[in-house]
Length: 387
Length: 226
Image 1 (cartoon, chains in turn brown, blue):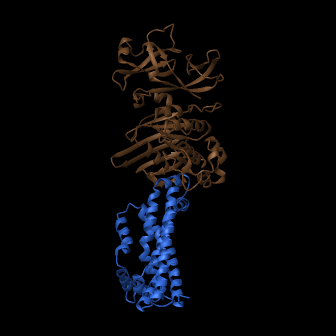
Image 2 (cartoon, one colour):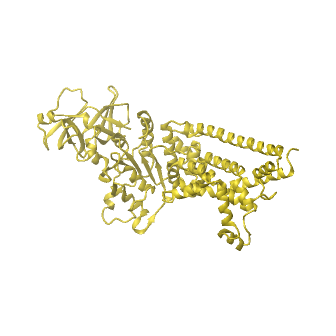
Image 3 (spheres, chains in turn yellow, brown):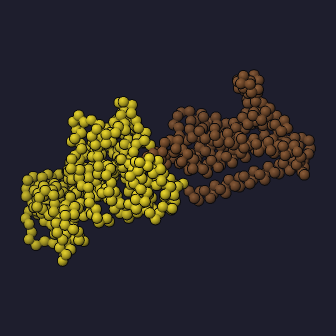
């Protein structure tokens, strides 16, 4: 995994606020409103998305994720709709504007790589590259090949590549058109776990090195937590929620909190490293709380993305002096909701300004006499660090 | 020399006719096949059926209607006469028109199958890579459909070489103008010149065998590649 990266972090200014009232087309970001009716399914969306960073489109299959992406790409034509990408109007049914797909400066990666099988890897990469004017090229072929680790495959035919390699070629091919919007439709869905882990680091590099908005469709909470800055939650053709990932992931009223992988994403900063015990201390934003984790050395000041799963956080009414758990944090109960499993409850906590989720048994909930505002100790049994 | 001058003349005419017909069929058949492969129109069924008609109709039926329509009193006949081209029956041009119609399904159907097999995805991928529809057709569709194009051209050529009924009805039997190999064989047999008939007929068997052999073996290697 790349070690010398500087994550972009969350957009400091939320573009949807800038565009909320009487917005005109001039502002940065993506404004999309679509109404699509196909058979019994209706997609009815009105979204304002940030003009940079990774926006995850999350939802169950059939929630309209792919249809949304196809509308953005112009591969599907909504009955009524408007699409404005960084000030440029791509669709406006009210005024009869429809920019065909091949004129939209976007990159699209399909679920299956969809490489041209009559062309070599180089031929595939050049296909898009040759069709943009030299002046607007911002990515070199060798650069894209290196970024995605496919330099050694250039002379091969797609039929001879593994699924993971094909998908990386497809991503590089899309990048080489120097898109101003990158659309990824579950690029990992058709791959097994091993291949997924092979591609994820490349996607994280993209996230850090590209200065264009990326829309990433996924139904895997883990991928969303790893990659996204901003989250749109789709359910049955409607946007249930949309907002920065730290807020949306920790909301108990959203279906994502009901999954087994319910988790929060925290941006931490490396504070110190204990070489004796190989323990890294990270400061959490907004306060004095910190998390400790066994990890290789990282320099102080480095920003890290930390994932804490609800199932890894347990609660206690007092701080136990002796415990094998590294992280015991003072927390306040903000909200309590039923979990998917009726024997469990989901608790939303506040740790000095940082939201945390905890999934505990209903028995423990009653036993601890939990209530809104109660002070508790959150024992964090495991955290995942994303470089 | 077992082949007479008339035989050689017939062979040369057949090659000319089949080549011209194949070229015309590829030019005309490709858009028809593309439309049939892509359309969701209700006309797809009727148009597909009309294209396939020569597969089941006796050649005499096609020849008969061609004669009626392109003859001096037919609609097309009127038109060609007004244009100063005379009438089509019993000319090489008439032969070409008849052959194009008669061999149409042998070209359109392999093309249509090849286009359908490509599916939507490569076209969408090309569009997201900035290829206009025309660009995409030549840079993606045709290369991917190449086995189908080869099959279509081969079958179109071979089938035109092998036709007899339509040729006889619309072209007649004019040496050097409309007398192709199949008609020449018929003449030899009528005249009891069995040795001459054998040379031409045997040649046709060998020619057709090798064309099909080439086609089927190339198809097998392509399947292995794709």
